[in-house]
Image 1: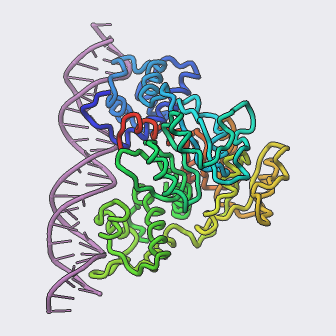
Image 2: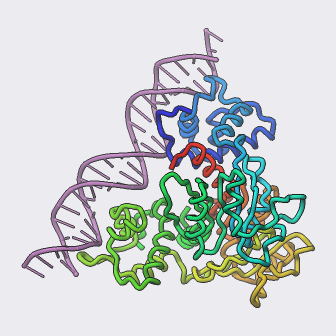
Length: 217
Length: 217
DNA sequence: TAGATTGTTAATCGATTAACAATC
DNA sequence: TAGATTGTTAATCGATTAACAATC
């Protein structure tokens, strides 16, 4: 990547979508694609595609377009699918269980290595029903410090109730974790070197309601 | 609302966040707030707050600021929390269960009225553990047409596996449902009068990974 | 070569921020 | 009234789109 210019947030958010479409093309055995054809499939302009990709390098070839295999690999590399990020889930309620059983993380470079809760009813039980997943045995939240010191953990997925979110977030940040995937409705205030992705489900639903009510696309 | 100018998407996406902050102020018994003080709490500019709010009306008063009670009510009204949107969940896997048990929907004007699945192991069981929720008995997906014709349904929450998403989405749209909350990684292509909110969890996680890897906030 | 399509610069568009007169 | 803060216009910034020379 060209480090001289900063990649805008809008571009970053489009990368996973490019990756999905290219993976589909790959699966369908399509060898090459022009920005124009991809733009029609994705519903964005060809200009935007070329601008976006050129933030990272000249992956195309004049008169030919983009080779699907290599462009898919490039975007995968940019997104770090070869990185094997290690993640823990904190909060083994319904959402924690949903994440533990989510099928698509491993193929994208994300490995869940532990899941924690405070409830004695849950501790010791398996969060992932099928398979031999040892990591899915729910651990006591009190053991998290020990766990993080012994194991590489890149990401904490927070699915704890609203009122505990801040405290848990501060705890894991104090343990050196630099990335939080936050499912609570609370906005976290943390040091600037911690990256946070919020999944504010209520917000998303309210936007849907607003748009439905105002019939605005 | 002033219908002459179209509200931009960026503004709409900020509305639930305003609502959350105002609800917190309300809970804390704070009577009035200036755009400047709110801007400091939310981490955005006071100018943006005033611009955003003035899309919908002049809710403030010079020299005073905004009354928390009435601004909270106004934004709630704009977001339609008094609307009682009726929703069904399609797909009673882990994510469907998580949504069925999500505590905050009712207070925001969203009521879940049914949940459907294809699996005979699930049909007839309750998706919501506690309480007396009759609606949470999982129904056979084959009965959805009958259900939607008998009951008002505004929103379909789709938590079905990737390969079934398109078919299910087309089915519910054919039944007249105009709003989809889509948890599948698939982008849906549907008529223009159907509003869709996507919750692409993998995309969100990949953005987190990218930002962590590139330490970019 | 001729045609196609990129990479990249320039133009446009829209969103954010700044400024300030209006006014409570 | 004097001070504070809005509503709103103008300026700025950044992202998207258009255009086209470069080149495969």
